[in-house]
Length: 176
Length: 83
Image (tube, rainbow over all chains, first blue to last red; front, side, top):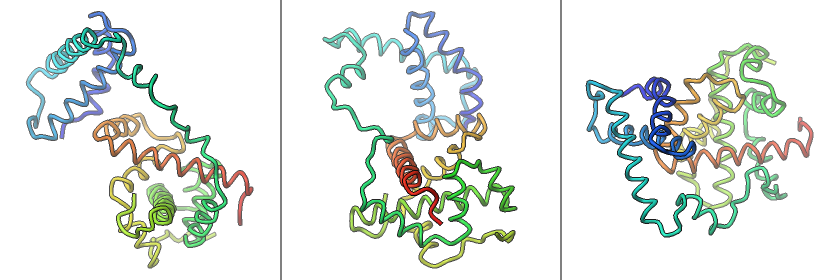
């Protein structure tokens, strides 16, 4: 497994500057940099790469440069001339923001019932999180290892998500 | 309040968390949990970015986790700490 975190830390800023010097706008440079790392991950997943070629940096920059050429070409072919993402946004309905979701009584009941099934300790953790405590603070109060607090919080969320999904779809297993 | 580490054993509860949810959704919830209190390391944040970019289903599942959390926060705000 390549160390993506290390590579990203070491090279993302430099890659963006490189692309900007080659004429890319700030946002395009940022997108192409992300795309470069994405390509790298896909290539690794397909087992084409177990280690980066000898000169890691040159490899990254070559991928980024190729992506920029492709991008410039796609701009010329695009009759509206703009960023494809911007164009599709103009036609799409605005998606509702997560924060604007209205809680229905039904949803509230499902979640309340689901929470009632959660054992005491994980429920305490969950309620403390809702009150804005950090995981470190919760670990301190409950005298628990931090890892346990994380995993118990995750399990509460999984349980709630499962109950929600099962209520929505009427299906029991492999709920999303 | 107890100081015993909680072992997570319990029939229905155990089954739900371990078996019933799709593995990508479980992973998304684990990521969401790790990042939700704003205390995660830079490394964790970057690793999360890599995970999000690795497949479209990852981002979809992560959105669901965020939606769930904002939902329960709204409920919590409405009810003021259910006991």
